[in-house]
Image (cartoon, rainbow, N blue to C red; front, side):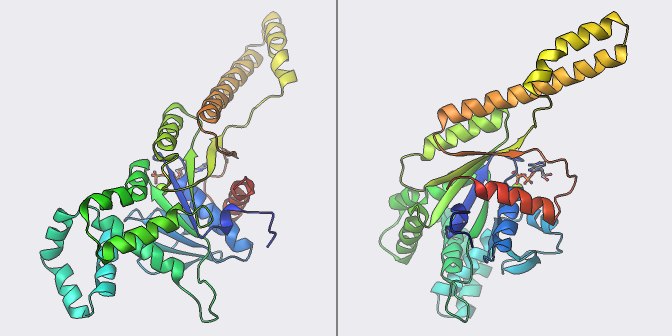
Length: 317
Ligand SMILES: Nc1ncnc2c1ncn2[C@@H]1O[C@H](COP(=O)(O)OP(=O)(O)OP(=O)(O)O)[C@@H](O)[C@H]1O
Ligand SMILES: [Mg+2]
């Protein structure tokens, strides 16, 4: 692999967060497809029962175990219940006892007593995946791309250490959380990427999340993706000519041309508004901002995902 390329993909973990619908799942999938094309062993981890990766890769089911979803990519879904059972199985020597704990009301009480248990179990799973080796002794997965979902979820996940500090003694769970928190905080190991579209709310939310996490030492940021940037429909030269064209069309009574000019102005205003939002983002967030185009494709096929991933990975970090 070209060592100059894809510094982001060299990390063990790439976490993706951003407001609803901005393209987190698409970009995780795109980076994974691109990583696979570079000969890496990407694992996509989707948190919760969202099942959105299923439709991106066109497979029937994605469960708690990594599965081949094609294009050289593996994917799994980490839901809280499976992660908690997994954690129990790892820490309670008897499978039967572990299962009965999960099966009865004890777990419910555990949840009530310690609301972060879902996150703990989830990070436990991530830590396990990171350490997995193949028969040749090399790391089985790299990079592990985590679709973190909404920004609130990202915050809870990344601020786990401080949550735990307040509620735990020195038991194995605390050690686990501390170890994993270190892994997530290490800039060589983990990067948190932010996704926004060039619109008011996603940009505001990105600026706010950056403000909350910056300087906390919980995680190092990777790229900020400005996804779905409209392409500028006209060159500066033709923009200047619009007034002339409009006047000429009016003079000869060509309403059709005037309508085209009006359409061009609307598209231009859209592109300018998008640019203004990205400028606002750039002014507030001193991170590399990687602009990704609005794609015309109705369906994100392998080629489209690969190209998007290549553009995304080509950015700094
Ligand atoms: N660059 C792009 N060009 C065109 N369409 C895109 C682009 N990026 C994402 N999309 C489309 O936008 C929609 C939302 O994308 P996606 O599901 O990846 O967002 P998300 O942030 O994961 O959403 P959610 O918050 O619901 O999980 C999808 O239909 C996807 O195909
Ligand atoms: Mg999604």
